[in-house]
Amino acid sequence: MELNETSADVIAISAEERAEEQKLIRRLQMMMNMVMQVIAQDASLTIDDAAQMIADSRKAALAMFPGKELAYDLIWRPRFQRLMRERFRIM
Image (cartoon, rainbow, N blue to C red; front, side, top):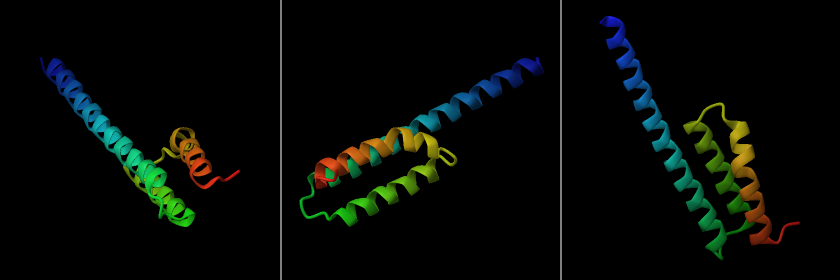
């Protein structure tokens, strides 16, 4: 019986951890989308301000998901680079 209870506890904990991770992912997506919208829509934003926002969002993402630099570089960096090229006409 104890083995089954322990297994159930492990399953419950991992389900809870998955739910927490999904919550963090949604929070990260919302944050990144907000940064991208501000960069795209705020006409008064300078290129330096936009670059600082991107750097700050990277720090926040890595604080939420430590050790996931590669994932950030594969998912978010190209999106921000494309946005910066489009917004500031960078080649």
